[in-house]
Length: 441
Ligand code: NDP
Ligand code: 2IT
Image (cartoon, rainbow, N blue to C red):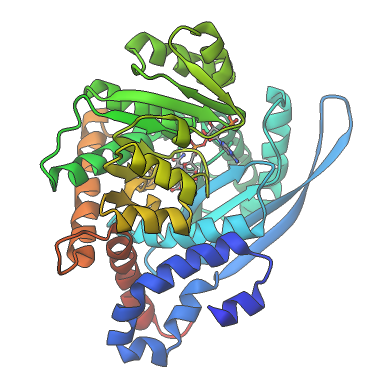
């Protein structure tokens, strides 16, 4: 870690993600001296390669705008590079390096053949017209297309990149490469997208949560669940929770949080879904329409304002800190299952684990999204499409398998399951075995 800190001093998120993994796999790494003889850990922590480029595009007023573009190809030991693209003003090298690193372990856990990657831009889709989004996506892919491909590197969505953006990027890729292959996942269902991919991350997280609750014989029905975010992951998490009889008591966006003490009704959910997906509105608009049942906290996260049994952070990294964790624990939270990547700070994780509650890190709990991306790749390769029921059944099996891997490597002598250790160890061992077999490359 000292060596990495010295070499990459301005990359706090990347160092944070690496430290969490390195800390929890130290014992298994030391058990096999052959790993260190090949300096395996350092090779695994540093991405295979990083593309950085300028993306120039013209806005609706004829003004030329310049953004940064990136693709981190972290590791392809077990399959083609695979991971999402993020468009958000906060995007920088450190954030994408942390995400690509995490993706490598997450993809390993899915049981499918996918390596780890991530990309994105500091372009903010907020307030941009449809044509501006399209021109930006085309300019971005003009730089990227030579370095991706169905067996090379397969991007998908992440924050700020959904079906619309994937459609524009895939369209331009197809034009440049003159091929119709599944080089992006999360595509529209009319041109190779998999049924259930939009739902997969949120649904998968709820399936993972059900597996965790089952270890303690706890039912989800009637439980109050605090969610953050109101994007792809948060919305489908809420939808699945409601269908299983749980109460959704909060949602948020980058402007603030809404707390609904009695829980969202099915009509409320439809209203929020439409507001967010059709009108790209703000969660405050929902709160304003229902002042009798909602409290809105401007520029605040939900955690200190909500009485919840379960928390499912589904917005962004480091959105739940030590104080938030203590507030949730004081309110009686029994489980935390992460929809976002690295939403809990190291201090928050320590609090959850010290309190012996069920705590699942994103790389295990949110792996359903990339897992169904892997299923989309499989369908594209065979030129077939599976039914929603088939994909959902595979997603449930994959989440149960990831949970079983966490139990296998994370159960301590006192019976407490350290899901961080379990996920990191299981994810690491598969990649490590593949790297050892392939030599120093
Ligand atoms: P979306 O862009 O659809 O939604 C993101 C949500 O989080 C929005 O409500 C957004 O608010 C909020 N948000 C984003 N950045 C911030 C911030 N800095 N502070 C506060 N709120 C913020 O993205 P997704 O739902 O796809 O992604 C959410 C999380 O899930 C990310 O961590 C992502 O990496 C992770 N993830 C996504 C997967 C997927 O399949 N999409 C798969 C696995 C993990 P606003 O609208 O105001 O920007
Ligand atoms: O963080 C993630 O796992 C994603 N954004 C999904 C990646 C993918 O390739 O589907």
